[in-house]
Image (cartoon, rainbow over all chains, first blue to last red; front, top):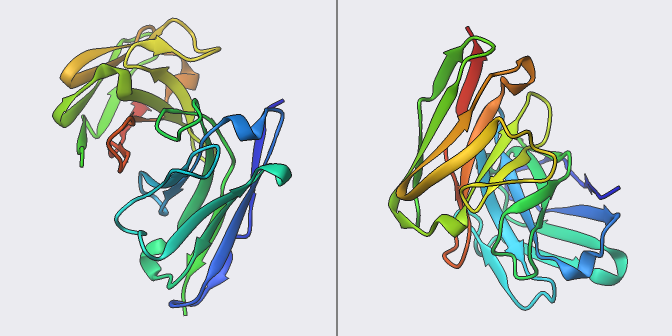
Amino acid sequence: EMQLVESGGGLVQPGRSLRLSCEASGFTFDDYGMHWVRQAPGKGLEWVSGISWSSSNRVYAGSVRGRFTISRDNAKKSLYLQMNSVTTEDTALYYCAKDFGSSADWYFDLWGRGTLVLVSS
Amino acid sequence: EFVLTQSPATLALSPGARATLSCRASRSLDSTYLAWYQQKPGQAPRLLIYRASYRASGIPDRFSGSGSGTDFTLTISGLEPADFAVYYCHQYGDSPPYTFGQGTKLEIK
């Protein structure tokens, strides 16, 4: 069974850092692009960042560019999101999502259950 | 950046009815790059439709997608209780940032 499991969320103070992880299973991880999508409490979906299978292409939403860094370790079948200089606007449930293709520019055909990030002093 | 505007924000219908959900793009979008997702409370989104009109694996044929240019539609025929959820359209492709519509909540009347 294909599965994505996020971890690393929690309570973090404004201005601090947090690293999210997503572990994949049940498919050939290094064949596919991957993404992070977030959902603030009671709000809609917001795409955050995507990375191609080889890490050669990384793209970001304007709201996180320069603060967040997406990365992956294909040997560990894992995706990461390094979140720096967080603000209360970053409070959300963060989903890991698998891209249909390898370049991180297609639709998302598998989602994890999410990890909650709460930014508060 | 593409802006996707969904309407209506909330749609109240009875089981067995037909639902028509709209997604309008701020500029013309290749239909290859439009998807729809369903999200139920406490769950992750689920892919329903990709390339505007192709059903994802395991999606019942009462779900259908159509449209081109700036106007896209998700139609659900013969609503079942499990269909009441929030629906999002999503644009992807070669023009990041990728964006979602704000969602349409389909609720039981």
